[in-house]
Length: 155
Image 1 (cartoon, rainbow, N blue to C red):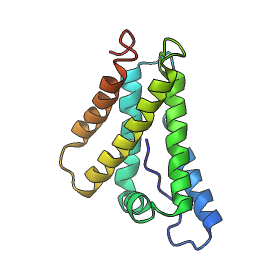
Image 2: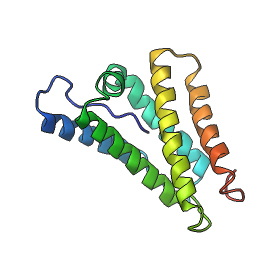
Image 3: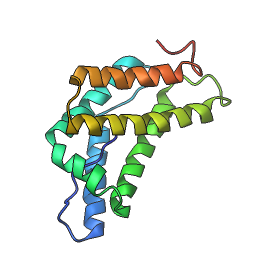
């Protein structure tokens, strides 16, 4: 859901790195369709599972991109872009009752995406819990954070 990877880490060309990383991010995002009429909880769980599958399969690349190369402006641009897309997509499917809470929900989503990113990176480094516990913690954190704004809409 949030940790990008897949670009050629040995490439000297920033444009190739950007193009490859963004392409990998797009492919990953395409595997996580979100639908306003669908089951929010199920979609969150499925989306996190898709991302966790990717992170586990590309553990070294994901860790390098998010820890070693995170200061690289090209890599940071890709990460920021992916987090922004995820936040926008989630905002579009959440049952936000009116515009008065939209900014607050957007801030919660941005914070949650950073939380998930850090938690997943730590988990990839040292699996201190099961994968299911990781996923459930991430979903539970979002539902809990959104509840004050979407009381009637959150399961």
